[in-house]
Amino acid sequence: MIAEWITLVMVVYFLALNTIHLLLTLLAARALVSNQHFREMDQLPMAFSLLSPPISVLVPAFNEAKTIVATVESLLQLNHPEFEVVVINDGSKDETLQVLQQHFALLPYPEAYRIQLPTQVVKAIYCSSLFPNLRVIDKDNGGKADSLNAGINAARFPLFCGVDADSILQRDSLQKVVKPFLHDPTMVATGGTIRVANGCHVRGGDVRQVDLPRNPWALFQVMEYLRAFLLGRLGWSSLNAMLIISGAFGVFRKQTVIDVGGYKTRTIGEDMELVVRIHHHMRSTGQAYRIEFVPDPVCWTEAPEDRRTLRNQRIRWQRGLSESLSSHWGLMFSRRGGWVGWLAFPYMVLFEWLGPLIELAGYIWTLYAWWAGFLSGSSLVLFACVSLGMGIALSVMSVLLEQISFQMYPYFRQTLKLTAVAFLENLGYRQLAAWWRLVGLYRWATQSEGSWGAMTRKGHKPSPDKK
Image (cartoon, rainbow, N blue to C red; front, side, top):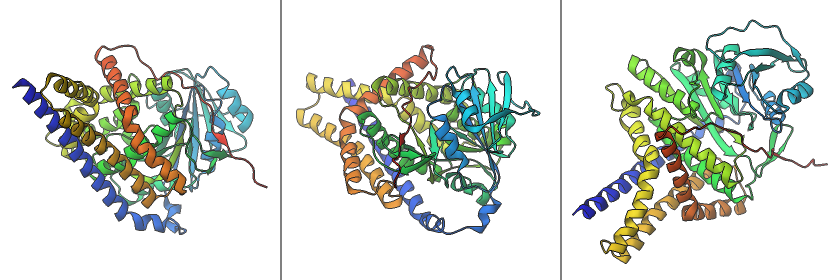
């Protein structure tokens, strides 16, 4: 009797998970189709782009000497009427500051620094003598959240965009990601698409040729990013229930972030925690607001290419998810919760937060039930085929939506390679990732020491000059 109940719970969980994934896929497809004419209009010169609000682009940097120049060069080439780039050197132990001083001719800049959010000590502020809209803040080490808060204090404009120091924005990304603020006065945050830069050719701070990485770890992450952004976030955004804006590329209304207390420094997942806190604050106070995902603007970022670094990243992500959700239980099923409190938050708790535990327990129970005779061999094979088949179907659907809507990977060999990855990632990689997430959940529950740590940077692949 107990075995039957456990099996029933597993089946119901599996059906609920895939039903929600199917609904999110349909919502994402609908959003892509309905926004197709806007993407076509983007090809034309738009007079109203001159009305776009000015933006402060904040770039926290800790030991980013290998990639910081390419990132800043990329940002300085953005197509936007008015913006500034503020790099926050968070007590780097490498030559990050020296590299910036050499390449951008930095000079000490006497500036009134208004402290609206508490941070570690700011030692100096520099301004580029080559680019008037580039400033660099040199401060004591306090972590990424502390650096972003320091950048917010120094930001001159009402909107700010957080960008990772290993990332490269396409030139029209800032112009596209800010459009929802023009159309909706209640907009408080938007996020763009993150894509894996490994394998791409970069020159002069710009991605000149898009290609897929040869490294298998990075290749699997290409598929994960496609699925997460084109299906997950686009679907939740349609319901104004998106709980995550990637710290690598997100735009926020500065005053809203200040009102909720800025980035939380004592958490690993400061980007998700801020978005959840904004939802919680706006819902509890009854204020009209929107948080939107914009699929067109693209930020290219370097993904880990070794198992150890990737493992540590996923453990940290799961810990960050745990901290973000556990700090805002009051949002779930609250009277004013809306879609975010009644669907998105419970989904994150049941399928993302506890998902690794339930998924691995399901694998173990299924094998035990077959070994003990509760489950026939044919039923075991059927369950495995259906479980893997649904994962493969979601991945293939993300590739299909990508090719129909954006065609970022235009060659047939690239589509064929992505399709192969959609199959292969479900045969071991997905289960390994679930185990890493379970480790992250355990470390959060036991309050084990954790931090972002350091990622070994290889730098972006340079594009050969063409004569």
